[in-house]
Image (cartoon, rainbow, N blue to C red; front, side, top):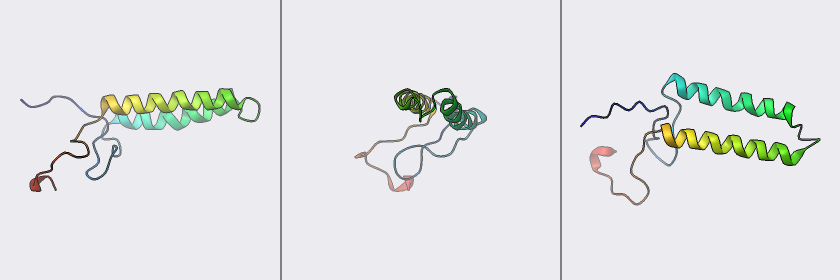
Length: 87
């Protein structure tokens, strides 16, 4: 049964992780991340309140990973056998 699911981030051909975005939604997420980091530097200046800034960055990173995990294609993980045709 063919999948109608549209992935925002394709799996990398080699190694772990995801490649560059393959849809406008993925590019929006990747553009919003640095914009929100810069905004956070103004909202929680690291020189004044380092703890709040680190917490903010941690939350942003967790959200980015969650979006990538949910909207990315998956391939067989480490230890899985690969057919010669997959190379």
